[in-house]
Length: 285
Image (cartoon, rainbow, N blue to C red; front, side):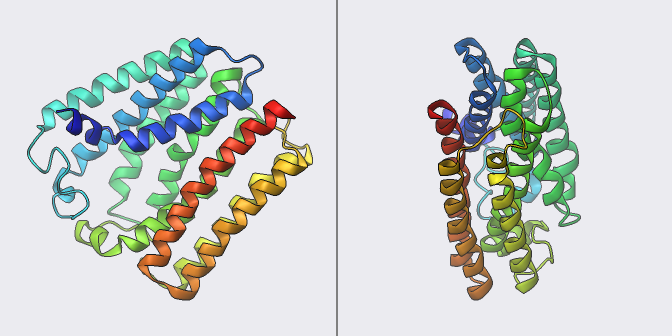
């Protein structure tokens, strides 16, 4: 039962999203409040868990066709759609309520994230590669959400955090779509921008990786309000981006599933270390 609960809410993904939200909060907080941090962690987890549960309800028949998803609780028959719907509904109510306790804007962006992921991104996955663009919006909200939770305001700072994680998601998800191409094909999902594992997709992956790197160092120039970055931190972030860019070029050269998986792993390492560098830089600067 515990394992199925973890699967229906995608616990590992949800925790990574909570990590992003907490990083955003620490960047925006003038004074760190432990109570708000706890609320953000639980509210963020419920928010993402609800989105994932609704997603698995909608895609239950398609999940049964793919090797990577056929053992999920619903297609495997271990959990009913009704039970999953109850979990998703309770998580939605709990998540938005908890985020509302922090402030209204945080709750609003949390609700927008659930709506876009469930009602727009999920249905589009079998229709058009543009689904990745739509999915990148709720995927980019958590980093921004943390700042909004800290400041109860939306400006250039959370906008920059949003843009950074927004652009990052394209090479990340295209890498996943590449090495899982055959499995996604069984479910009828269109994840790659050209619909193929070709040079066109690889070139776009490189382009969005470059955009990610450029946005990541913008705070060092002092044009993003209270979101600042020291020169040393900017150099570290830039170097991390170059490592990710190296694997994007490797994908262009080799166009193999192995190269795509290496890019995916490097992208996860990149965004995690970037957020740590941003936060550490703020507190030691």
